[in-house]
Length: 188
Image (tube, rainbow, N blue to C red; front, side, top):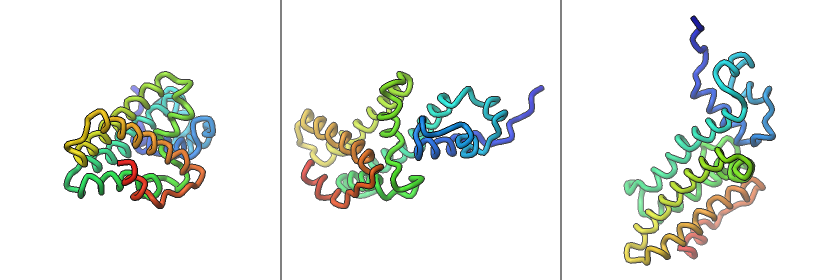
C-alpha cells in the first residue's frame, strides 16, 4: 500500500504558478520549481508527470483563481457601475496585490507569448480563457451601451481584450498605465 501524500497539492501548484509566472516555462529549472512547490524530486515525480504537465496545471490554477475572480468582479453589478468595474479590471494590470511581483504581467499573456505558439494543449487552454475574457468584456460593454450596435460592441470588446493582454506584456517591461481611465473613455 502506498503512503499518502505529505503535501497540499493546491499549495504546490500555487507555488509552481508563481515561479512560472515570474520566470516563464523556459526560465524555470527543476531545482527552482521543486523549491517553489516545496517538494523533493521523488515527491514531485510520484505526484506529477513532468514540468510541462505542472505548467499546464499552473495555467489552469491561474484561470480558476485569478482570472475567474477578476471576471466575476467585473461582472458583479454590486461592485459599482459598469465603467467602474471595467476600469477596476484594467487597474489589476499594475496594482493587484495577488500578483507575485510588479513586473510579471499576466500568466495568461505570458503563456500566450511563450508556450501557446508551440504547444497545442497550452494554446487551447489559452484560447478558452481568452474567450471567457472576451465574453466578460462584451457583457460589460452591453451594460454600458444598452442601445449600442452588437457588432460594434463585439469589436470594442476585441480591442479591449487585446489592450488588456498587450498591457500586461508592456507591464513586464515596467510600463505604467496611469491614464487607464482616460484611455478607456476614449475607446468606449
